Image (cartoon, rainbow, N blue to C red; front, top):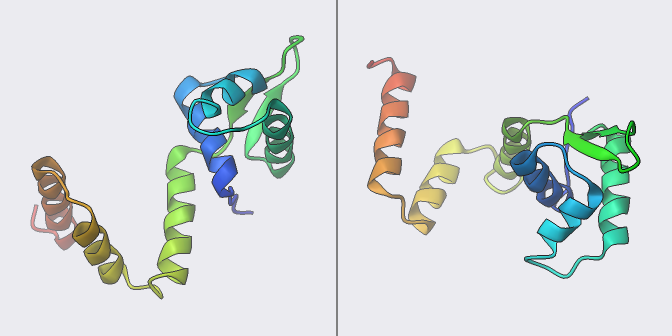
Length: 124
């Protein structure tokens, strides 16, 4: 089964990936820095994420600790596949052209892209 986090779940996962294991309160405090979110909403979302298998919950201590089951790379791949299929009708070229056209890539990013393309084409 492929795990497909929602946008809100991805926001929570970003916090957990950054901090490692953390409590609902820690996640909520981090989210509250950027948006208006209540503790009970964060708690409910994290319970749903546990039920979906996105996070594990350690119940040994009084305060439950959560850690991510899905990696950042798995989540990125899932999100990218969804965008590629739904927005770009499967065209990787259109996705890359749109991304590079809309966002100014740094010289280092352009060089990394060139290096990747060389490896992809077997010119290494």
